[in-house]
Image 1 (cartoon, chains in turn green, brown):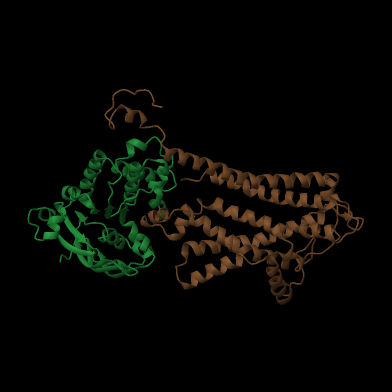
Image 2 (tube, one colour):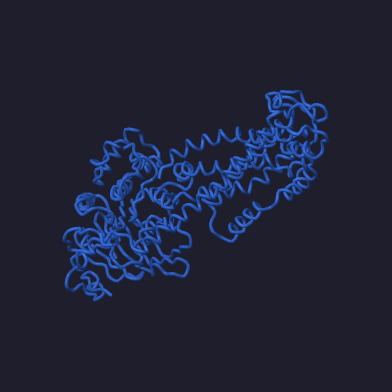
Length: 253
Length: 314
């Protein structure tokens, strides 16, 4: 196990009532890399992300055991949970434009954190919208409602919002579901750029996306960690695990 | 009958089928008929609600017409309640509604916010919710009895505006809590989750997203309770309302909170049943004033609500 990993997950188990969603997994996510998480539905991918920013605590009925360490610090012991969440950007698969203007959507997190001038906000909003490949489409209507954008645009708005508080860690859960392939490619390029000083967790059902972007890839199945390794290994002909092999080559189940 | 040929087609098994592709089948026709029936049946029900309402209003106005005048509003009752106006009752109702709303609205709305946004789902919360819903269904005469015991006797307020207002507040409170909760519940959970992921606290999310998008629903609940507090007679007749109270005509603040007062709803009851030889138009005119009062009191809230609804953002 690597001690200077950005995120260390230790025996993390989560259950919702009787249902076990994660069954005690341990993982190291190296800093400044893209870490892809693949696996079929119900394998606990999204639950894993919720544990990292502790929004799992807001999910009724969820019980968490084990540890998540960021920079070696146990997140359970962090008192300023809002500060912790601002160190992490989260993008979930369903696009959610807040019922605010496009500008206010992106400026929401910095405003809630406080201490940003109007000029700072202008810069943040433009930078994040550019990174999310949305700026050109909305620059003339920053005052219109975020909820009025198309599904794909709202999804990119969600990405811009996740970047607005300048996180160290970016968690993307199926970010490209509602986005066309060309725009997806533009965002993937941005992710490769962001990787220089950001740790990115990428949950995806598109195994080719994991292959394109992931430095390392882990494969979850039914709440268990099947395999974690460098992406080349996972996608090779002999990943060392038959289930992984079958899943990434599309002969699963 | 066969429709005219629509040219060669790649669909189906020949020109006939292609031409009929978009023609109505029996099933489609039945669906359309069912929808038409549903539309007219439901529309008739909606009309059945509106028509009696308009009829009642028209009937009231026609019957009240002989007595309606500006003086009827600003004068005090005269000639042993057989003439004059309803000023003391109007002001009394204003007092009762305002005081009860001042108590019930903040408590009810804040409790509703707590129950919907903060409370964990455990047996205690469920018990509180159950209690609130059941209290909302308690008949007003029972609230009246509680008001007598709790405010008039135990708290030592005596029969007074204060005791009557508190009784009205107790009566309206559960409904305000329930309607506040419903309004908050209508704001999609996804908005809250998105904000929590951005490091906003529960209260920040409530202040910036949840309340601005539920305030019109909350106001609707309050408006309905104003009408209820103004119109209900049982809770106030035991706790602070009198048959007749002499006040200067036209004075705006004739009562102190510890006084008893007259109220429109009770006045309507007395002039209808207790006063012999009262002019026929008197109860109708009183009812018109009561309806007018509720309407004026609510218009402010209705205007505010319409403005806020126009800003509703999804």
